[in-house]
Image: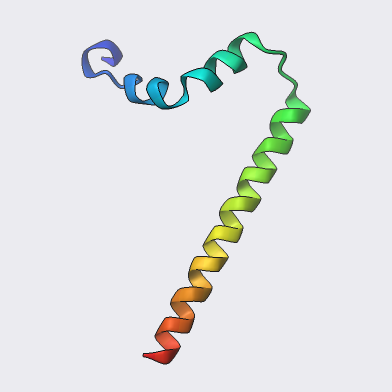
Length: 61
């Protein structure tokens, strides 16, 4: 159960203000899609950087 296991407690503690903004703010699908693309791009860049560093370290070792 969500209440019993406090499944949402940690999430809401970390993201509460964002959740409130999404619930009560004006929400547009186009804006959400832009944010999703930007976050995905950031994750890919981070992955590429980490992969490159690991590759360089393994090539030296």
